[in-house]
Amino acid sequence: MAEERGWGFFNNFDLPVWVAITASMLLLDLAIYLQHVMFHAVPGLWRLHRMHHADLEFDATTGLRFHPVEILISMGIKLAVVAAIGPPAVAVLLFEVVLNATAMFNHANIHLPRPVDRILRLFVVTPDMHRVHHSVDPRETNSNYGFNLPWWDHLLGTYVAQPAKGHEGMEIGIEQFRKRRDLWLDRMLIQPVRGPASGGALDPKVTTKEPVD
Image (tube, rainbow, N blue to C red):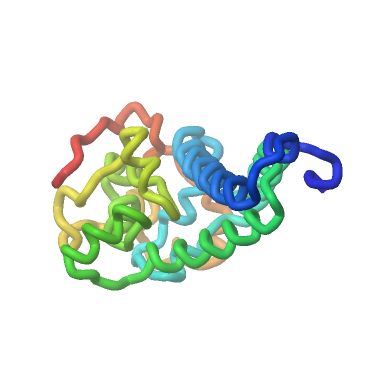
């Protein structure tokens, strides 16, 4: 629809297709990063997003655990971004394929050798990098927001290399929901209305943390 009606930035310039596709995928990834930050910073949105963080284990299924209302809001934001930048339709398709593949990868419960991880995270968010984001420590929860590309965390100051307690000693989840019963579907769906919206990025109890090498 955006292409047919001339909506968006790229639909108003005669750029080479490969430039439009590459730039569109980068901008879409930046939008997902900023959306992720917003879901941590706005208390009402954090109430929805914390269902993703309440998982007490970290594996590929965590990458699928999102509240239905968050999914709808995310779709609305993504459609608005598409209308604004006017990416080629193939760029949106490629971005969705890559995003879903990397979301499964960076939530995987696997261990990569440190030298391999160090090289990979120059180009893609690795499981070790994203696992820090699922730490029970709010200072680490509110870091490493990237799902696909790691560059935005570096550029915008939200990157933490390793958890303070190490990956073996780090607890996964959030402080509010630590019981197995909290992981049942009925409890997860009503999490947004349960308890305070603590642990988000703007929580006054959350302080910044220096990156750990």
